[in-house]
Image 1: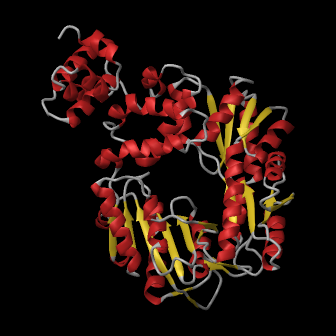
Image 2: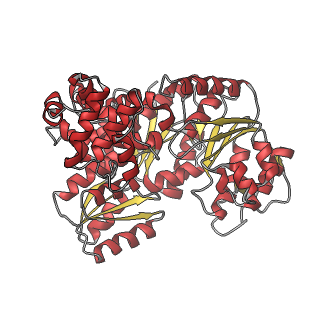
Image 3: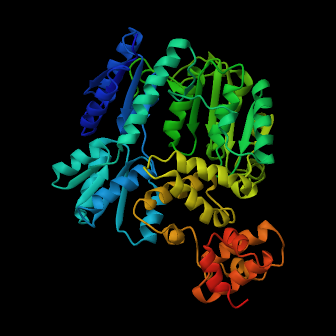
Length: 532
């Protein structure tokens, strides 16, 4: 029997969904339903529990609403910085005054991109339809003529007489359909694992890199999977803490049970309380009929992942400790407790031991979480993995660029990429590769790739000590050449010849070796180094 997929949309996205849905008519029975929020939730529950639908698809605020309420397989149509850059490029053809209205989270990297290239961009976020209308109205009052956003946002903009571009890419919709079909197949065989009402298949083999640090990390994940203890995962922003948590879950005996994740820093205290502990009917204004189970209760037999636990309020820390000790949870508005069975994984990008010493985190909870500890290394400490990571991100970017172009970019850029500090870690590297893929479509000379990243590659005036260290370094080997490659990127034209001459010295006068090390052409090395 074909997978039965229900797609919810009441906005301008419906046309794209209908068009792409026809391409999958031979693979699945796809039904487009013009419902949202409570109506969509009621419809989905009826279809799922009467076994007349397998998987659901939604987007934007409607998708977020269903994700927090629906106990069924749900695929969210995602957007990322690449999708937004494509939409903004289309919007710029209409007007220089462009506005971006995104659901919940702003795209910080795009704001940096806009500042670096002097592209005027006004951004707003929203959670509810009222928020979206208010955001579009503010942009209109600022003189914005074209708005990029979800179907809801584009419809509001058009109502106000503005031009509008959908934020969703065709590739994003295609990816959602393919994921839904895959989930339906996995559901039929019992191989699905849930993460906050969505599903995951990640294992330690999805961690890219052949460095000693990554081999050790994969080994530690397998060990943690075999022992049913709480695990504290620490690491900087962007290192992949949730991927590690999912990998622990899928390598554990709880793999066939739910994996439910929540970011403690992304919700207000009231929302966090209802998400964690659930509530009874009538517990507060807006509580749904019949009440709702919290994540601890709905994860029976599975794994709970609390991301950014260092941002959890102290009062919640006390309640969490009690749940871990007693294995019971009390819903908001209830007088009785319910038995729960789950494994807890927690992650933090701050040092929790230091937070304990500063009085911002309970010591007893810290010791309870820290039965096993995983410290994920930052990208700058495993620079030997950057080539493999960058190659993967370029290959998987939905841009029609030849492999030869990608290889050419990696050949000239890797010496610099390996020397960067990467404060945003793997997430930042992924964004850089995606931006490079987009710009390869319009820039013919990859040798000028440094100009694509003025926000990434700072001038020597911004960090003079790095420049001086690289130019005068007496350290031998690849590290010194990497430093020189980074220094060349940041150097003024007057200083570049000195860097090339030092690279030639390190390379014992071999022009090709110096060219490979700095990511430059042989002719540039000859021209700048001819005084040697």
